[in-house]
Structure formats: structure tokens, C-alpha cells
Amino acid sequence: MSAPPPAPQPAPQPAPVRARDVAARALREPFAPRTWRELLYSLLSAPFALVGLAVVLVTCVLGLLSGGVLLLPLLPLVLALDRVLAGAYRGIARVLLDVEIPVPPRPPGGGGLPGFLARNLADVSAWRAVGYLAIRVPLGLVQFLLGFAWWCYGVIFLLYPLIWQLQAHTATHSGTRSGTHPGNPGLGVGGFAFDTWPRALLVVLFGALVLLAWPWVARGPLALDKALMLRLLGPSQAQRRVAQLEETRELVINEAAATLRRIERDLHDGAQARIVALGMRLGRAGSRLTRGEPERAAELIAEARAETREIVQELRELVRGIHPPALDSGLTAALTTLAARAPLPTTVRVAVTGRPQAAVETMLYFAAAELLANAAKHGAARSASITVLEGDGRLRLLVTDDGRGGATLSGAGSGLRGLAERVRVAGGCLVVDSPPGGPTTVTVELDRH
Image (cartoon, rainbow, N blue to C red; front, side, top):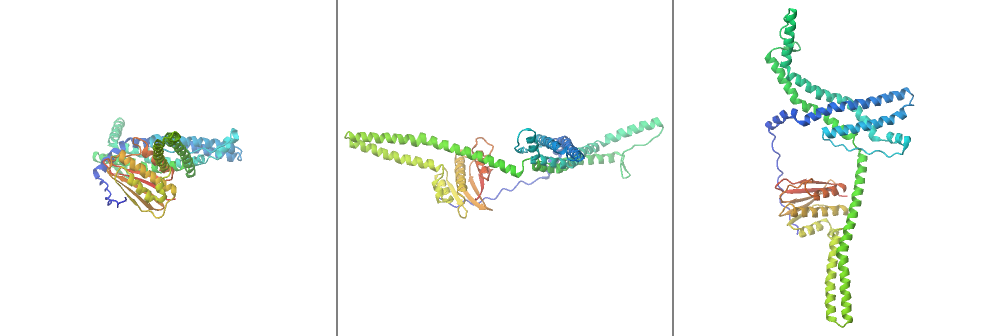
């Protein structure tokens, strides 16, 4: 029986950001491994862009000078090379930046030289790689200036007293040999010389500030570079959609095959064996009748009737795993029935106008059933709630329990991960909020139609 849900608890407020934590992070960041990996990426990735763009420009010039004769045979080779360079960029980004960029699929093509030419000329990802390399050259210059050059200036300013004293020592010895006394030279800016120790310490302080700001300044163009890589070096939106549809098709086929195998196994091990036993019992009852033992025959027939009811119930349970009969009366009735059969007290609230698509109802029902089972079996929950909300053409199923928490998609077992995969293939998403100690809230969001 459905009951009103408990009053919503106020969302926990984020912990205040303390100035001490910000300062500590600012001091650690120039020495963090991530910062040095980003600097190494800026240094290693620049030559690839120069090589790729230079090859494209040389090919275009040769093609124009030859009246287009050399352009057709050379352009596919250049596109193939740029695709290799794009793969190198994806590898460097994966190792140094922890950015995973999927490899775009290659277009189909025939064999031989004509197939090679057609396949490379029709390769949209190769043309996008050319565009990325063209943008990457000026962007790489900016990355070099704000990355390596900025770091070099910071180190030079930080070591300025040592450099200043070495210059002074060299100038003094040179003046002694030449009979002149040039004084104590230093860095000069606009006629102002940093030629005393207090002024030299100001340069050191400025160098420290430059080094502290270096990671944050360098990450500006690096963030733009990451966005360009994801946009131009990965699959296009159409390619991602095709890959998703292929994955969906494969998963649907596998699930259909698994369902058929389960039905065959359940029928063979359950209903079929019991029907065979029922036939044998009825055969014995017929034998008893022919031998003039009606009382024993009546007992066997009564046992057969009881067996028939059990077989029917077993078949209903089997069908319920394919399509719950409770869904014939709507999602609210189905979830209410599910909550009544749940191993822990469960409240239900459904705020949906009309009936969603049948496939969506079925997905939400089975998701709620699996999440309730997980809460009782793995979460040690004492109570749970099921809420279905509607908004912006999408349905959100929230299953909350008061268990011990700590559930993750990457944890032991594949229950939540498998459910998340099925929801994703259906065009939705699954989010787990399960801090240690609970409560656990799993949200499943799907399109209404």
C-alpha cells in the first residue's frame, strides 16, 4: 500500500573554502606531477603540428605548380599521414593529460590503389585532423610562450641574485684587467636598475609569483587545446551516433538471446518436467480406474489438479520476468504491487501525467525491482522509497534506501554497472549518490517516449 513519502531533507551545504587551503594548493601546484606532464605535452606536441602543416602546405604548393597533376596522388598520402599524426596526438593526450579520445572509424573502401585513394579522400576524420593541425600551430606557440617560456622567466627571476653576482664578478675581473671600474651592474627596466640586494630580493619575489601563476596561466590555452582535440580528433557526432546504434543493436541481440536461453532453461528444468510428471500421474490414475480402484484414482487426480495450479503459477512467474502483468494497469499500480512484495517496507510516489511508452514503463519497473533487491541484499536497508517524477519530456525514477551506503558503479559485482549499461543503451542515464553510511539514492532518467 502506497504511503506519502517522508519530508525531503535539506541538501547538505558544501564545505566552505578556506583561504589556507587555497594558498596550500597554489604553493603545491607548480610542483605537482600534473603540471609537469602538461609542460611536457606542450613541448612534445608542437613538432607534430609543424610537420603536419608543413606537409600539407608543401603538397598544396606542388599541386598548384604542377597544375593539379601531383595534387591527386599526393593528397591521399598527406591525409593518411595527418591521420597518423592525429593518432600520435591522441596517444600523448592519453598518457600526459589523462584525456581519452576515441579513434574515429575509417570509411569503407575497395582494394588496390583506387580504393586507397577513395578511402583517404573520403575520410572526414583526416580532413578534421588537417584543420586541427592548422589551428594547433599558432595555439602551440601560445602554449609555448605561456608554458615553457613563462616557466623559464620565473626561474631566471628566482635565480636573479646569483646571476647578478656572477655578472658583477665577471665585470669586476674584466675591469681589473682593463684598468676600469664599471661598478655593480644589474637588471635595468626603464632606467631603473636592480643593483642592490633589497631590489634583487624584489626580483626574487616577482619570480616566485611568476612560478606560482605559471600552472594556471598555461592551462588556459591547454583547455582550448583539449576542447579542439575532443572536437576534431575524435569521432563526429554522426559517427558517435552510429557507434551507439551498433552497440545498442549488439546489446539488444545479446539480451534477446540470453532471455531466450533463460526461458528455455526455465521451461525445461521447471514447467516441462512438471508437465511430464503430471502426465505420468494422470496415466496412473487411469490405470487405477481400469483396475477398479476409484478411491486411489481420485487421490491421483486431486494431486494432478494441485500440480496443475503450481505449474500455472510457475508459468505466471516466468511470464512476469518478460512482461509484468501489473504493468497492464499502469506504472503506478505496477510499482505499488512491487513495493508490496518487496522484502523491506517501501513507499511509492508517482507524479506522471498519462502513460509513458510501454518500453519505458518496463525499463523503470525492472530498474526499481533490481534496485530494491540490491538495497535489501547488499545495503542492509530497513526501508526504501520509490519516486517517479516528470519534467522536460523525461521521467526520473529515484530509489532511496536507508542502508549503509558506499555503492558505486565500479564496485564489486556488475549489478549496478549492468543496469547503468542497459539504461544508457535505452537513451537514458543512471546516477548513484551513496555516501558511506547512507542514505543511497539511485536516479534513473529516461525519455518519456
